[in-house]
Length: 104
Length: 244
Image 1 (cartoon, rainbow over the protein chains, first blue to last red):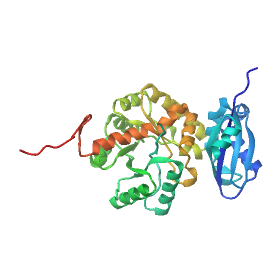
Image 2 (image 1 turned 90 degrees about the vertical axis):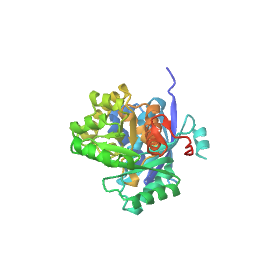
Image 3 (image 1 turned 120 degrees about the vertical axis):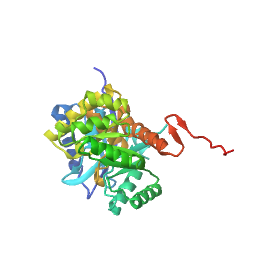
Image 4 (image 1 turned 30 degrees about the horizontal axis):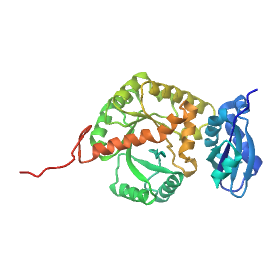
């Protein structure tokens, strides 16, 4: 079986207050499901790797094939846990090491 | 080479100075190099100067733009005659077919915009695209409705946009993706805005062009035309001789 290629995304969350990790990932899943449905969401291979509550920076892992879908869904997020919010992609990389290096 | 990103449609009221300043700072922080805030018929030179100064201070290039919502062909031609030479970009919001066709036919029109909420009023079909292609008019797509709409209205809008973008590509009509936002929280990074274009069928390179090279080309072309040295396309005054 062919190995699944992945990409790691560093995200900046901008909102009032500090949402919990669960609330953030729920908002991401909701945005993807709303745009692409449950079948589409199942193809993304989405996983939350890290969520820095203080800096409101998250790291997600997605499959390379669904990167465009996930980026479009992230840009469409307008609220997290009932509060107005927006999510920006700070960087995309093939490895976590490179992503953290990029972020620094 | 890094891309210079352009957002030609920040819909803030220039009279609300605080909101305007916030939007300008955010655009600068997000890495845009040119922005535009549309004016309607009442052009206030003082506001325009203030906006230009605020943008220059934030490291942005301000593009003057006028949006017009004509009711008839005559209305449109009258507006163009009066305002074409006063603005760098002219956008026509086409509410009926007659206006849409005339706007696409007229070389003085830069951008064609269609109402997002009523899909029956989106007249960008093959005939419209052919006219627009001959006259260098571009199709403008605002991102804001895609962010605020949900459910069936968003589905209908995406369906229309996908069809229009396919037609525009077939007829080589440039596509310009703008934010169309009036609130800070709906502003997106240029690359995030381009990724929304993925939803209506633009690939990565085309989406990035729609937020950078396509709008920048319109601005550059019009600035050249509005300069005092312009004579005709491709001809400009290089040096003036002394009268003998």
